[in-house]
Each structure stands twice: as structure tokens, then as C-alpha cells.
Image (cartoon, rainbow, N blue to C red; front, side, top):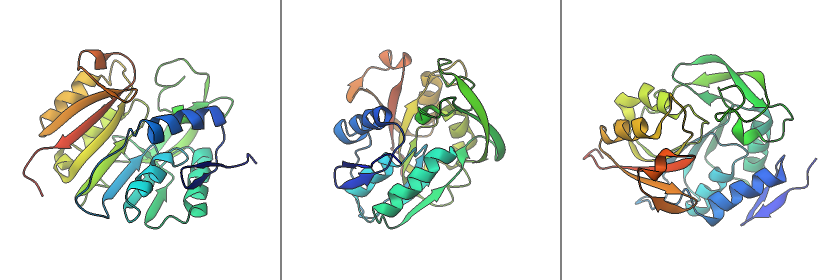
Length: 235
């Protein structure tokens, strides 16, 4: 077993150190998921939780927050559960499922070498077509099934399924205060259409890359984070 490392106050178990350190820089150094809440126990959905770094970061910000962490890859999920357990994190529910536009059994493609598992995707050879992958079977649920009550944060890092998942849940997006969406541009998952959908549901949008805000024009190229805040009068 790989020896765990310390990230902030947390002990973190992992599979690929290079992958982990890249995620650490994005989440703990660039503060990709920083937000300010008016309550000390915000409700959070962490979809594409991987081994749990975003979950740990949310717990650093708000120790009493309530998190539903979703991770479809069974190798990642085992480490996610271990990191939640070893760090004694309360109010975290871990679900070994993917988010999709329909519920049920789905084919997920993971790295053939079982190393770079942050790129597990419904798309063969990863979202960008640049990885050698193998299929595995996973269970999927819909975002709408989770949005039965107001939620403070929805974080989506779901490797190219963002637009389909958001479209499925469009009638319940008013229940979400803030979204963090890592956009993986594809012909059927483009940043402009995601932004249009969110704006039509009263979200104000910022585009962020490598920790810095960028223009919408520049956001059309490569991976980009969309931060969306609900400006409607919903409480």
C-alpha cells in the first residue's frame, strides 16, 4: 500500500502521487472551490470526488458541512472512503455512483494502467481522446434525484458529462446556490452551451483557469472552471 501523505491537517491515502499533487495544487493552493457561506453547515454535493481532496477542502472551510460525495470508479471510491474514515469526518455520505442524464448501469472508461483515475469518463480514451482506457460497469444516478431540497454547493468534475447532467436537472437548478463546474470541452459538451443554460436559470458566471479569472472567449479552449452563483430570489 502507498504510504499516505499529509495535506494541510489531513492524512491522505492515494494511488498516483503525481496525480494527487496536481489535484492538491488546484484545490488547496489555488483554492478552486473556495466559497463563503452564511451558515456553518452548508449542504454540498461533491460529484467526481476522486479520492476526496475537494471533500477534505470543504471540511477545512466548514467542519460542520454536510457532504454527499459521489465517485463511480471503485478504486477511487475505496480511497475516498478511507480518507473520510481516517480523518474522522462527520456528516459525509459516500456513494459509489456516477452522475448521468439517466439512472442505471453505465459503461465507464478508466485508464488501462489503473493509474490516472481522475480521468475516468463515459467517453472511450478519456474526454479528450488521449488516454488508453478500458471499460468497467458502474451505477449512475441523476442530479435531479439529489436536488430534493436546497443545496449550497454543487461541484461537478465529471469528465465531459456536465451539460447532459445539468440539462437533466434543469427544473431543479433553482435549489442550488452555487455551482463549481470543471468543463471538459467536447462537441456535445461545450462551455458556451453550459453557460447559456446556467444564465437562463439566473446564475451569474465567472470563468477561471489556473486560479485566475479569464474571459468567456478564452474559456472556449481547454479545461476551464465555471463558478456560477444563483442570483434569483429563491431562498
